[in-house]
Length: 76
Image (tube, helix red, strand yellow):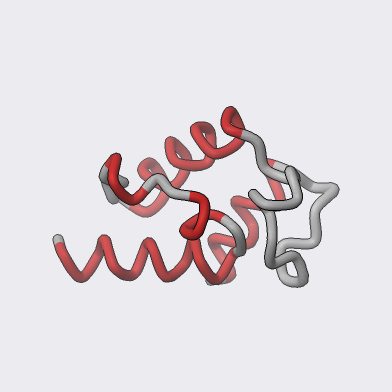
């Protein structure tokens, strides 16, 4: 999780990813941010994010993103 938080902070240093739970809903992460984030996740964690997993619920919080990564790893 620490590695994910570092990646998120590098992407958007002005956001407190440990506190925010509505990243998409509050407009803190926009579509371009999500696309960039997905590319970074795939590179850094060696996963491929399926298109059907690219939904707001999976990117609304650091915890949601971490759960997505865990699910992808289990399915691999």
